[in-house]
Structures are given as structure tokens and as C-alpha cells.
Image 1: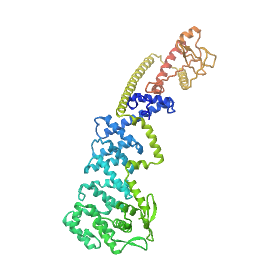
Image 2 (image 1 turned 90 degrees about the vertical axis):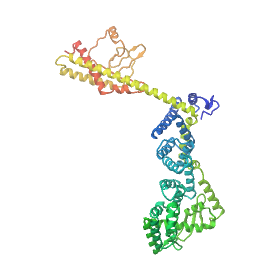
Image 3 (image 1 turned 30 degrees about the horizontal axis):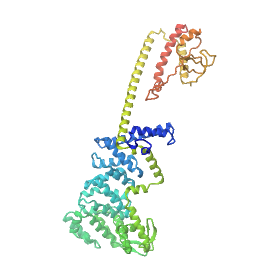
Image 4 (image 1 turned 180 degrees about the vertical axis):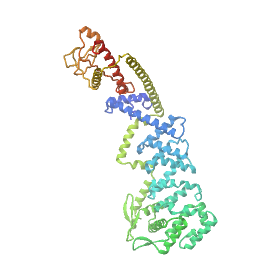
Amino acid sequence: MFFNDPQLEGGTAKSITAQLSDLKDAIISNIATLDATKALATYQSIEKTAISIADSSKTLQRSMGGVVMDSSKFASKLVESYKNTLNMGAEFKDITGTIQGLAESMQRMVSPSQITIENMVALSQATGLGVGEVGKMVGELTRFGGSQQQATEKMHELAVEARKVGLDAKAFLTNVNANMKSLNGFGFSNSVKGLTDMVKQATLLRTSIEKIGASALQSKVLDPEGAMETAASFQMLGGAVGKLADPFQLMRMAQSDMKGLQDEIIKSSASAFKFNSETGKFDTSVADMYRLREQATLMGKSLDDVMEVGREAAKANFLKERFGFANLKEDELNLVTGLAEIGTDGKVTIDIPGFGEIEEANLGSAEAQKALEEYMKKAGATEKEIAIGNLTVAETQAKDINIIKSAILTQMGVQDRTTFLQDLEVVNQNLGKAITDGATTTAKTLESGIRTTATFEKNAANELPDPLISEDAQNQMLGIQEKVTERIQKPIEVINDGLFPSAGKAPTILSKGTLYKGIVGDDVAVGTGLIDALNKGGGNMSGNIDININLNGSIAGDPGQLNKMFNSPEVQKQIMDTVLYKMNEYKRQQGVLS
């Protein structure tokens, strides 16, 4: 913001203290139309943000079970990543969240590169997948080879693949991650591609790889005996069971080609359905229904799951044959197949993103082909571009405000930011020590005062005559106590009057340039050297005698604590008991009490 202003001598090379001083002066000078109070609030906001970032960084280190060797560099890396993701609408907690997820997945301390952090945040912002889930998936992908950065690049490829065929990238990535552990077994040869192809195929059919049943069937055909028994059962079913009726093919697919096994199951299920041009639906015969029921039993699945997969697969095959004239690429064919609708009259329409609804016959037109090409181009964009493009008006406003709030910290150099955070830490340590020391001193002083008062009361009580206090004296003392309490709670008002004012007005006494406040409605003498003043004035104290005590104060760095102490009923009782005792002693001297 101001750091790149050539009028500020030194620019970004200046020390952080000097830069902040210039910034504060600029704000106070109405460059930002702020008064001094708001300038201070702005500075405090910067300080609060800096402390929050530093604390979040240390909390992250602690949650990973240790401490990063150079915490200042670690924090600066996080801030730099934050700076580069602000325009996507990211917050600092998104940065720490991705790293936390990565650490949980890898079960150790991690220190990902800046580009890896930014890629993880971008994936979260573009797909809607939680930052923690993105971090965990990156950790899982590294189990099968490659660096953390390469894992984020692989996730980008998967997201692009999903978008190009019209799938929800978030759901697609979630399904891939949920089935990642399957790669450790037979049938995949540790290939992530094989798994993602299976998930993609299942998602296009609006189902899951679990419902298709390849994994369930695999467990039965891994050995020769099981493969032969299962193949014989498929042979008896009849129909287009394909390789499922060959025990050697079954065992091979179960051991090294799970995607091929899933393909065969889908083909067998789809073969049971035929398109009914009169109703626009896909129907199956009674014989095929019985076959699908037996197939479901062999795979340990429900008939509903098998029929659902078969009907969707038959529909996809039907549409792909109908669209063959349009010379579509595989991703484009999968996209329009998923977007196509078949009416009850058999009429097919496709709603192409960015183009609108067209009839089947127009799919090969230049306009439709251009619309598909544009969609594929957008689908292949980076997650950062997609995240920025998908921001709503409200999100854009929030993002811009966040950029302004964080601009000062993110514009600092690494060394300046490190110095600033270190200075803040020292200042807060000193402040904490001052408050702690002050509280300790106050506690000791209070303890000493209470002990002294308690000792005084104990000794005074031992010297009182027997009976201690008459009933009349007790009533009089209660009356005095009520009046004192009433005066403590009564508001104070300044009245300029003499030392001995007229009745009903409160006096004021000027002593050494100090204006003392009295209570309206009483004849009160407040000040220093009152005894001398009374003697010189020839005054005589008579009638009812009230004592007014106003106690207030605060402790630097911890305002309100002293006032709270004096408002405590326990402390007030100690003070009142002492005052009443001294008052009675004075009255006895004056002959008021016997």
C-alpha cells in the first residue's frame, strides 16, 4: 500500500519500525481520512493480525508434535502463501488447515513447499473440498510415489478430468480418496489411474464402484478353484456374460486388472436392457431379470443395484451410438451423454454449457462444436483461475476487504516481517511481566493491609468495656453504617463554595492547587490539614457526625481491579468496622457514649 510509494524514503528497504511510523503519520495526516484514534485502531488491527498469524503458526507446529527448527522462516512461508491466495478468497486458517491435514495423513511433522501449500488451497477453493481433506489426500497420494507437489498436480489432473465429463469435482475426488486404500491390494498394481478410471466410470453411471461389485466378485476368483466355480455359474446364466464365463480371464482380472473386471460386469448388466422406442424407456425381459438376480447373488449385491447399473450403462451405450456421427472426442462424448435427455417420444436433446439446449441432429454443427471446445478449455483451467472466477459478489467484497486488512503484513519483506513479529513478542513478554509483577505487588500489599486491619480489630475488641455496646449504641452504629453506604453510592458533584458553607450546600477546599469534591446536601470538610483549618476558624463540631468515604483507583496495565477490590463486600466490611470503632472511641472521648 504505502510501502511502494517513492515519497517514503527507503521504500521496502526501510526498517519495519520506520515504515509503520510513516504509515501512522500518513493516516493521521488524513491521507486515509482517519483521525488519530482510528489510526491507532488500524495499527492495533495490524498488530492483532500479526500476532494471530504468529500464534497460528506456532499452534500448527505444536499440533504436529514438535517445533520447526526455524519458526520465523516457517511463519514467513505461510504468510507468503497466504499473500498469494488472498485473491482467491482464502483465509489464513485455510493455509494452516491444509498443512494440518497433510500432517495427519503422513503422521509426522511436515514442511511443504510454498507452491504445494498454494496448490492445496487452490484445490480447496475451486472444488469445495475441505482444506483438511485436500491435505489428507495429498498425503495418501504420496504413498504411491512422487512428491507432495506432484500429488497436488495429480489432484489437479483428476479435477480437470471430472470437469471435462461434467462430473462434480468435489464428489469425484472424495470417491477416489475413499477408495485409495484399495490400491494396496490385488488388481491395481499400485496404479492410481486404474482406480480413478473405475471411479470415473461408476460416477458417469450415477453409481459407485461398490454397487457395481467388482471388489466383491474379486474376492471369489483370486484362486483357480473359485474362478472355475464362478465362471461355471455365469455360463449357466447365459446371455452376454463375456469374459465372466472364462475362469482364466476371471482370475487374471482379479489379480491385475480390476478396471477390466468392472467393465465386464457393466457389459453383462447392460446387455439385459433394450430401448423401447414407444415409451422412450429402457426395459428388460423376464428372463433377463432372472439372470440379473442370479448375477447379483454371485457378486453379493442386491438386484436393485445391478439393475440400476445395467439401465444407466444401456442408456449411455445407446446415446454414444446415436452421437457417433458428430465426431466427438471421448471426453466430449461422455459429457454430452451425461447431459442428454430422452423424451417419451424417443427425441434426444442436449443442454451444452454456454450454448443452450440443442436437438440431437444439430450436435455436429459448427456452433455446437465451438461451444463444446470452449467448455473443455474452461474445464482445463487451473484451480486458482476457477476459484477466482467462481467468487460471488459478496465473496469478492469480502476478499477485497481481507486484502486491504492484510496488505501491510503481506507487503513486508521476510526479514522485516520476522523483525516485526519478534519485536511484538518482546513487547508482549515485557507487558506480561509488568502485569504479573504488578499483580504480585498488589496482592502482597492487600494481604498486608488485611492482616493489619484484622490485628487492629482484634486488639480493639479486647479493650472494649463489658457490656461491649449498648442496644441504643448498636442501633446508632447501624444507622451510621447505612448512611455511609448510601454516601458511597451517591454521585459526586463539584460545588464551588467556602470552607463552612450555608446549610444544605457542600463545601470545597482548595489546598495546594487541588480541587476537592464534596457531596451535595451535606456539610463536609474535605482536604489536607483540616484540623488546623478548623482550629483557626474557631469551628466547633456538634450534632450528627457522618463519615463519607469514596474509594476508587486502578492499576496500570490492569484497569478496574483496585476499584473492584474496594467494591468487595468483605473489604468494605473491614473498612466500615474499623471506621465505626474509631468513631465510637471519639464519641466516648466527647461524652456521647458512656
